[in-house]
Amino acid sequence: MTTSERQKPVFRFAPSPNGPLHLGHALSAFLNRDMAEASHGRLLLRIEDIDLTRCTPEFEAGILSDLDWLGIGWESPVRRQSEHFPEYQAALQALIERGLVYPAFLTRGEVKARVSAYEAAGESWPRDPDGTPHYPATDRERPKAESREMLASGKRHAWRLDMRKALDLTGELLFWTEIGDGRTGEIAAEPEVWGDVILSRSDAPSSYHLSVVVDDALQGVTHVVRGLDLFHATSVHRLLQVLLDLPQPIYHHHRLILDADGRKLSKSEGDSGLGELRARGMSGSDVRRLVGL
Ligand code: GLU
Picture 1 (cartoon, rainbow, N blue to C red):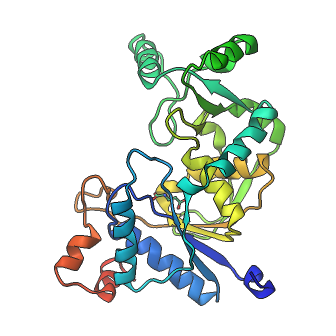
Picture 2: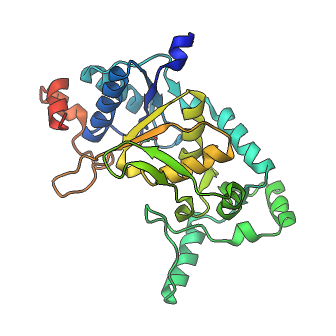
């Protein structure tokens, strides 16, 4: 990389190949490309495929071909997260050594049963911005010796951030710079609303939160342009950047494309798949108009 490349703004489009792209992705990709061009910056493509059960090479090939059809170019090589698990592991290990994460042994079913029992008794259980119940305190409060024994016996576990400990360590309010379509300016991060977030799963050696902050830093990303559905996740990303001593990019969370019922488009429901628009004979510039650009 030359010195002038290093100083250029760096944007990235980071789809997960767990389904076909839809209009919301097209908006994201166009905005990243437009902003990179307007600032004489670089555009990277990152394939976020840590979920090895849902991501497939076929979906990845579909993403590359859809972007081509939209007329969007990117730098190569493409970074594929599944090829970089050791980097995420190293970041996790650093947090383990500082006692900021703990092994979490409860299964999804056990957590669900515990929350249901609590709620059935009329108590309210905290939920994160996505509506998922916070992880119970059981494993965080488990005596260290017992956790070590359970780890040594090979019991399946994830790793979760000890949110209270992390916040005590950072001590002060954290902010990020937001220039997107919703609230803008210096936004106060509220990572506590997520509870003890998962950083590594029993079936995947990293989580979205961990790999995204590690990659944005390793790739020198200066501008994160993505949908408003990830606005609140940025609180966790900001905290992880401080804990791991990583630089902070500028964030631009853009409007979402909603379906006729006002719901966010989702890959799983096959909404407005780009493949279908393409089969109907539409062009990249038709799609630009469709997403309001
Ligand atoms: N991989 C995420 C998705 O497809 C996007 C992550 C990001 O842009 O930070 O929704």
